[in-house]
Amino acid sequence: MAMMNVEIISKEIIKPSSPTPHDLRNTKRSFLDQLAPTSYIPIILFYQPKNGHHVDNQVQTSSRLKNSLEQTLNHFYPFAGSIKEEGSIDCNDEGVEYYEARVACKLSQVLQHFKGEILNQFLPFEPYESHEILLAVQYNIFDCGGVAIGVCVSHRIADGATATTFLGAWSATSRGDHVLEAVCPNFDAAKYFPPKGIPWGVGDMGVSKENIVTRRLVFDKSSIAALKEKASSMKPPTRVEAVSAFIWKSLMAISKSKPAPARVNIAIHAVNIRQRMVPPMPIHSFGNLWYFATAILSPHDELDRDSNYGILASKLSNALKEIDGDCVKTLQTDSIPESLTKSVEMYSKGEVEFYKFTSWCRFPLYEVDFGSGEPTWVCSPSMPFKNLVVLMSTRDGNGIEAIVNILEEDAVVFDSNEELLPFVSWTIN
Image (cartoon, rainbow, N blue to C red):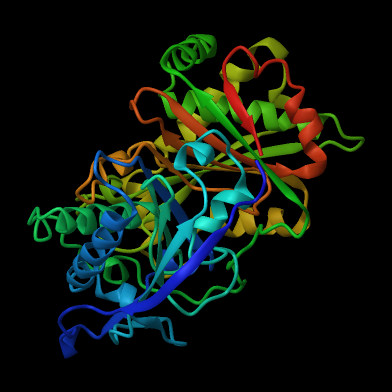
């Protein structure tokens, strides 16, 4: 599909409808916020046109969205602020960016393809460029009356769980459900995880200067069941562990095909730690509240090629279990965890190949209803990180959609991997 014409017809700054009280003006960023990328979390939600919902109706809907966004920002006030140099958020009510755009095609034409350069046009800006704004929205209206809502949330102050909580609260306000008090976030993260002096700059460690291409792999319920059985371990992996291990194995095949393959392969899986703390934090806690589970495959592990997948699934499962209450306590001390220091050292020396996974499978993104129905598709478009995999539930909740970002030069090996074919339907970007 050729590039389409997306025309920005208006741009506004939306501010909280009530000023943020003076005693809430300063929100500290936590140690975990310090570790997060400096880029944005991009999310696009697509909505089919409803009967009678033509383009003119969508303009009215946009007005309702802006009003409800003002109210929602009263509770999520850090999004309307700016980051100060000393590492806190000045909740100064400067506001968030809101764009409105017309798209010269039907929504159905977009849903037939997965192309990053097309999808990124529905976002307010390129999410891997530097901007001061902490939240921006683009409301896209298609010729048919369908809609795409593109959101860029700053990873410097929020993770995917916080972004989903925000979208849930905003959509509930838009449709008239008064649930804001129930999902009202708390801002205690820095109290639990005080900021630390970090000797290295994390920022966008891993952003590739080389060309990245994206593959969208869809695993249905039966494929996931087959993978879990294929792992053949005493305790079957979860569906996320099964899919992650399978993609890890497929990505390692790229390294093995090279003249000098990596001797050590490490899978890093982001883990939401809110419910793993003792006692647990509220699920609506604001900020970056995740840490890395690290599964390492050393040369001596590859003893039996046939059991390789089972080994990977088991290693991943064990690594994820290790992110428990005791692990979280080590993040709350004054020192930087040794595991983190080691990972950074190995990364900087280039001794190993890293494979990065994040799962959004439990995020209720398909429940984000702004008043005219639930989304027909939700995606996080391509990201310029080599070997980064984003997992999301399919709309029916039974399958998993994996967005796999790889170097362009590695695509030939990945695309010709015959082990993938029985398990996935996929789209090439």
